[in-house]
Image (cartoon, rainbow, N blue to C red; front, side):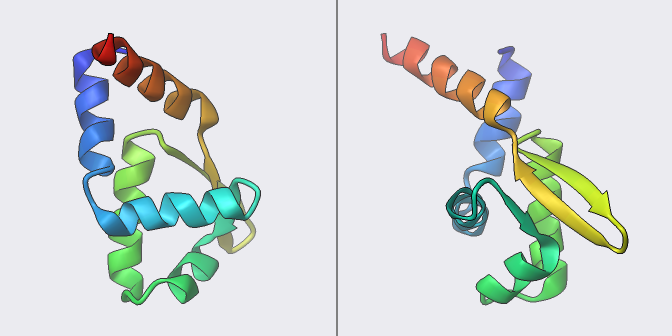
Length: 91
């Protein structure tokens, strides 16, 4: 993983709300709809959308449109690459 990608993911993970979103998606078998995420968090819909956008831009989430809804899926490959990069730093 290149340093720019590593930095982008690190920035996306630097917010407690975004970590909560990832944890909730993981608990729900790796995917959740936007409306479900908004219901779970004590945040406004625009705030949730902002956090989701950051996670999508970091490739941690994959959005899939289903009719009028968007389902977010945890990107296991990118997450595994990021963890491998962290383990490399650890030595």
